[in-house]
Every structure is written in C-alpha cells, then in structure tokens.
Image (spheres, rainbow, N blue to C red):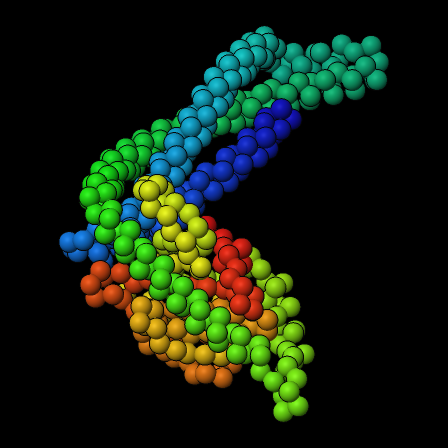
Length: 396
C-alpha cells in the first residue's frame, strides 16, 4: 500500500510537470499562430498591388520564420508526447507485472484460507495455545492475517484501476499526437507556399533592383531631411535663453521625468498595440537581398489600416509638423529624451499638451498607392538617435 501511495504521488508530480511543459508549448503555438495570422492580414492588404516592395519581402521573410518556429514547436510537442507514450507504456508493463504478482500472492492466500476455512479450526488454533499470552499472540496473528488478505484484494483493485487509467491516457495521447502531426504537416505545406511566394517576390525585386536602389536613396534623403528637421527643433529648444541671455535649464520636474524614462529602458510599450517591424534601427543589409543596404535612424512598424499610435511614456507634446514623405510628425518630450512618431494622418493632441503613458496621439497614414500602413518611430537623447529596440519591450 505504501508503495502504491508513493507511486501515485510520483505519477501525479510527473504528470503535472508534463502538463506544464505541454501547456507552455501550446501557449507558444497559440502566440506564433496569432503572429502568422496578423502577418497574413498585413500581406492581404497589399497582395492586390501590382508592384512588389521590400516591405512586402520583409513581411514574407517574417512569415517564413514564424512558420518555421511553429513547425519546430509542433515537433517538440510530438517528441514530448512520444516520451509520454513511452513512459506510459513502461508504466503499463510494470502495472501488469504488479497485478500478476498480486494475483499470485492472493491466490496463495485464498488457498491457505481454504485449508483453514472453518471458524472451528481458528478456534481450535486459539484453544491449542499453551497459555493466555500465546492465545493473545495467535489472536493478533489471525487478525493481521485477515487484514493482510483484505489489503491484498484492495491492492489488486487499485492496480487494476491504475492500469485502466494508464491505458486510457495512452490512447488519448496517441490521438493527440495524430492531431499535432496533422497540424505540423499542414504548416509544412503552408511553409512551402510561403517560401515559393517569397522567392517569386525576390526574383521580381531583383529585376527592379536599380529602381529599388533609387527608391532607397530617396528614402534615405527623406530620413535625413526628417532628422535635420528634428535636430533643428531640438537645438532651438536646447538653445532657448532667458531674458538675461542664459540658457534655460531643465526644470526639476523635467529632470525627474527624464530619470523615470531612463529607469524604464527595455520596458516601454510599443507605440502601436500590434505591428511587425519591417525595418530596424541602424545600417544593415536586407536579409534576402544582400546587395540592398538600409540605414534607418529609427524603427519602421508595419501596421494594419486605421492603427492608433500611443505615447510610449508620459511627456509633453513639443512639436507637431508636416513633412512631404512623413505626412504629420509628432514629437513628445520626456525630460532630456524625445520620442518621434512620423507618418500620422489624424492627430488627437496639441502642442504644449501633457500626455499620459499609452495616451492616443493619432492614427497612422495608409499609402493609397501601396496599401501599406507604416509608422516611422524614433527615440532620441537630445539630438542623438537611440536604438528603440533597447528601450521598447521585447515582443513574445
């Protein structure tokens, strides 16, 4: 009985650990599937456009990688289930051996009971005692013998139940494995479709590489123009002087706000509820077109049409201005730091307004020619650009 109780506790603990691991994998699959569906939705917004773009290629690159992650997760779950099946098969074999042994022992007990089945024999066994103490010992022996026989019968029943439960669990796991395997095969087919579409896009873009280079050069000029405009605004702000000609320092409240902003590095929310990063900060080659080099002073988020932009931290709206390529631009000051939100259509705030964390600033403009909705986001310390990925929350 103690063995069975210990076995039950051990199996429960193992089962809980298995469930936890499986739960983590299924949660991961749910998260990746959500990302894949969102990327598909973004691609659908531009799939009817004749002209392929680097942004579309970035989304397809993302889609392929997400699909690979999902397939790996399904593979891990299948391996986990296979291990569980093997463990349960071993448990079933062990329980069958235990049951066989228990039945054999019980059969011997029954046989012994049959030989001394008459209560009269038991009384004779007691009366044959030499003295009172021997009679007491024999009485205790008979009581323990009967109790032991009862426990053996109970152990057999409990082992039978455990065996039936393990067999049922095994069948359930086999069905579950089949379901996961089907999902994995489906995703593998989808991955191949995504790869083919990605390769077609790469081939189309390579034919247009000269034009793409020109577009990127134009984009770089626009980024530089935006950067100069931001820098000019910041310099004007920093060079403000009091009536006596001295530079106006940050107020204690602004210093405290800047310190609070710094303390939240790596924890700031994204400027949109959901989006895909299609162009990261800094100078880098495109992963699928090594000949194309991009140099971004911020981060570009590809969103769905009508996406709302939110402040990543509390601060003061210092400037709202219009740029030819970036539509409307909103600058929010957080002490010595600034966040810049470009490509805004509808603006919900005014210059000089204090905004709270996650307060709505406006909506992202959708390019009617490409169907793309892209937020260009920058983060600066004074006039110096910072890498937003070091400040924003890592997306799961």
